[in-house]
Length: 444
Ligand SMILES: [Zn+2]
Image 1 (cartoon, protein in one colour):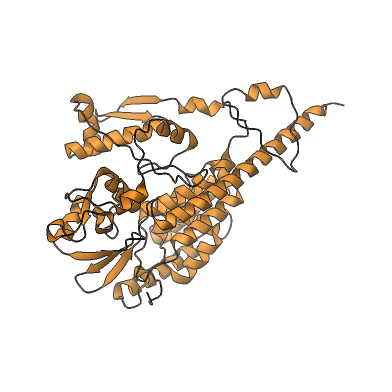
Image 2 (spheres, helix red, strand yellow; image 1 turned 180 degrees about the vertical axis):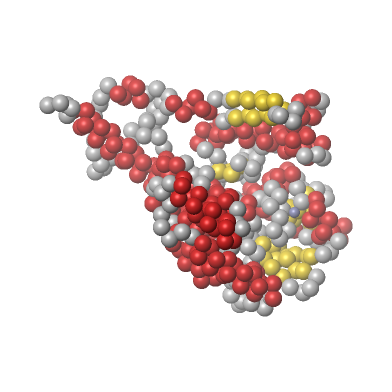
C-alpha cells in the first residue's frame, strides 16, 4: 500500500471533513477562551463561573462541567493533547467520552503518574492511523481501549492490605523488609470493601406508580446475567428489559453461551468477555472454572463449512475478531449479530472467517441492498468499505483476536507484572513506616 495512513475525518479532499476541521478548531478555541484563568476552589467560585458563562453564552452548567473536565483530562495526556492541537482529530464530544471512561478508574489509581503514561500511550496508538482513509474508532472501541489500559495497571490500586487468601510474599530485592507486628492479624481479615460486593437488590416505588429495580452483583455473576439477558432478548426478538421481565414471568428454556477469550501462550494474559471486557482476577477465575469447552481460535480462523451458517467455533472467532458490527460507525456488540458473507453463499462464497463479518440486522439489510460493498483483510480483519459514490474508508477490527490486540496482550502482561512489583514495594514501605511510627511513643 503506497498511500500513507490517514483519518477519513481529516480527508482534505472532502468538503465535509474540511468543514469539520474548521468547526473543531473553532470549538477548541472557544472552550480555551471560556476556561477560567484562576483555579476554582469552592462551590461559590464554580457558581460564579457558570453564571457568567451562561449569561454571555447560554451554555448549560452540565455542558460547561462536561467540557472543562474533558480539557482537564486532556491536560494530563501530553502526547494526545499535542496530537489534538495539531490535527483537531477529536472534538469536545470525543474528549468527554475519553474523560468519562477514565473517570471509571479507581480513585487511588488516578493519582498515579504511571496510569496517565499508560493511557497516553494507548490512546496515541488508537488515534494514530494505520491505514489510508481509516474510520475514526467508535465510542465502544474508545471505551474498551481505556478500560483495557486501566485493567493493565490495576495492580497499582491493589489494597494495601494483603489478600485474605494469602497472597505470596512479595520479592523485595532492595526494598525495605516488612517486620512482623500484631496488626497482621487484623489485616488477615477480609477487606471491608468485600461487604460492598455482596449481592443487593433495591426495589423502589416511584412517584409515577412505576417500580424501579436496582440489582448489584459481583462481576462474574453480572457477566453471566448479562449473557442470559442478551440471549433472551435475541431469542424473543425484543429489548433486554422486556426480555428480562418475560424471562421471569414466562420463563422459556434458553441455551446461553458465555464466551471468554484468552491467549494460551502468554503468562498473565487477560481474559476478555465480549460485554464486560477484561475480567478482574476473581471473575476470570470463577468463570474459567465453569468452562465446558475450549476452542482453538487459530484452527477456527481457517476452518470452512459447506453450510450457510458458521459453525460455533467459526462464529466465536469472528465475534472475537470483530467485537462490534463492522458497519462504519456502528457500535452494536457482535455477540448476537448476523454473520455476513462478503461474497454471498449462493454465489459460491465460502462460509469461512475470511469471507465473513459481523453486521447488525439493520446494517445487514443495508449491505444486502448493495448500498456499500467491502473487502476484508484476512490477516488483520480490517474491512475496506466501498461506497456507492466511489469513495472508500477502512474500519479496523478491534477484538482481542486481531494481531494488534494480540501484541497489546504482551504489553498488558509486562505492565501487570511491573505494577504488581511496584504496588508490593509501596505497600511494604508503608507498612515499614507505620511500624517505625508505632515504635516511637507519642509523649516521650
Ligand atoms: Zn450495525
